[in-house]
Length: 268
Image (cartoon, rainbow, N blue to C red; front, side, top):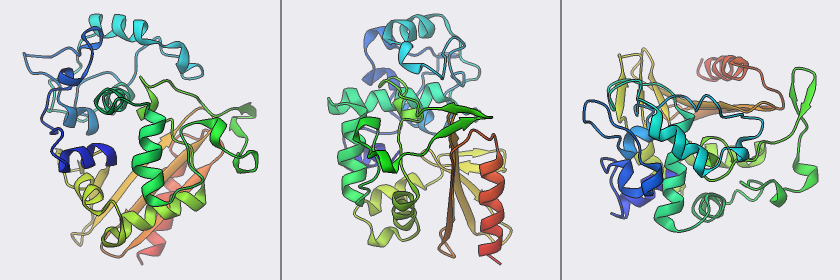
């Protein structure tokens, strides 16, 4: 989201550009009611694309190559008309990451390293497990089964390839809470601007969920999980309070409960 915001600010693309403009011929996205998917809709999860292809195995996502994705996109139908309904889609945000690789002629890992980690001083973060020191790794679990970090190719890296730790995530959180002090100030502020309203329940920015509180303050958050790890980040830009939750286990929704409870205590 930050990289796309930078490109928008630099005039290199717009969120209203159709996604197909930047995708190769074999990965063209379907439309619905003759309405094509835009880049902004990939980033705010209103594209209408399924959460993920039914035959994608998230234990081995590297096996889902360009040929398989091409076959999937050529036969799938959108669930909703683009821009009309929020439906979280790993397919969509993965394709957004892939668009970055085509636009910038680089790998997803290199792009995030150069554009985000280097600019924010996040020295313990990487998109490549090989770049992480062994002492910086935590064993993941699914129930009582050990799980490794998931490696994704550039087709899906945007949906969950980043590996980080509490030290770096607090650096990231500080940049979000105090954007005026950040090298990426304008990009951060753009990612937090609403691009879609979900039935007055919450707004969606560029990959952020923006929930209004009763006092007109915003609670901004996102969560994530692979089969061995769970994460949550949330913050209140008005009170400048925030929380990061990292768990070395797949525990659906528990990271959210912890994060929301901590925020409620911080904001008392």
